[in-house]
Image (cartoon, rainbow, N blue to C red; front, side, top):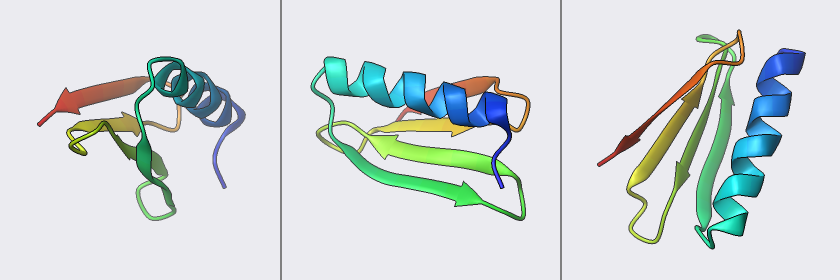
Length: 61
């Protein structure tokens, strides 16, 4: 189960992507790693990982 800070950060980042007209292709919670993973962007080139403490990082591939 995601932590409250993870859930809040996921909402904020999803809203940000939506405001920038970026499609979200994958939104997944990995129970083993306790991370939320998002793949977004027209070319599926934005990857966001939200850690269980609410901190996040992104990569443009």
